[in-house]
Image (cartoon, rainbow, N blue to C red; front, top):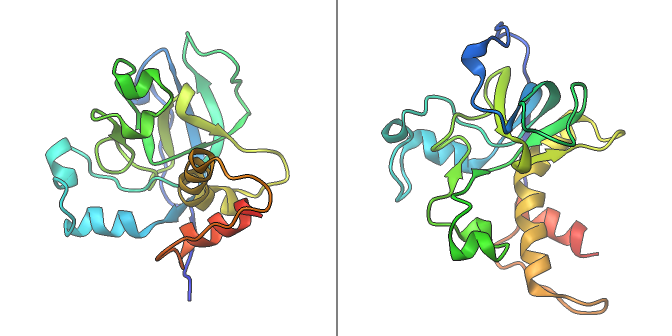
Length: 188
């Protein structure tokens, strides 16, 4: 059995003031939905072998947000107010190591993870580095796009690195949940 929980963001009221600005390379998203990943539960319960969220000053978990761009940083290109965007688990990286140079940012030792090191998506507004903000196509509802930011982006990267060809077999050991389901759909 697989459980997916998506929560529309309705109750938090906050304007997108300057205090939400992170930098000239970021976009500010007004989130409409966010998913609940089991990683978030583990981050909040502090039962994994990673430092607690509080070590990084993070008070808000979540890494499956979907919404609309309401502000664009001065250096950002290719994003406009009104574009739909999503926030994934990898919020940013160092951009200065062998892994980053070779397109393997997910292995960067200085990776900044949304909801653990950077503030998460359980809020109405969030800043996100434009280069790590995912575009959400028209026709994909936010309640579908939010959870995809984690499970599908994780599985997409794994399938790309596996260099599969049509007709190849793929196995997802222990992947009976959201990640495994996305893997099956993407591998088809």
